[in-house]
Length: 105
Image (spheres, rainbow, N blue to C red):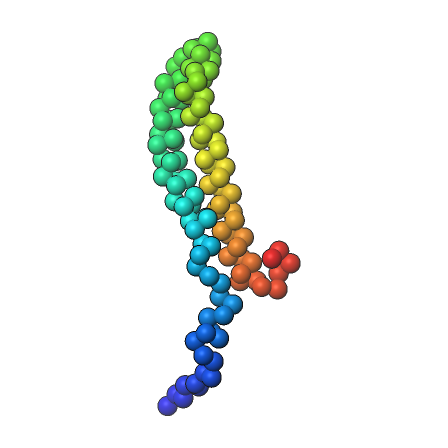
């Protein structure tokens, strides 16, 4: 027979120090938007580079120099940079919360 020990702490005492839920959305939306935005960006850039497979240097330079294509490439680079930064931040936060005595926190 297992005896369960009763806690003398109140609900408020158990909840203190856990943090509030009001500050958790600053990372939530970018974590969802960057992969959704990344799918059509990768598809579009793959189509552009696929069309460049059999072209000469001048045609390639002309297509890459087009403002729309250049903007797509820049947006893709920024999007994936933000996505990787957020992913690394999540990994570091989870590791630091597990290793509370770690100097990285």
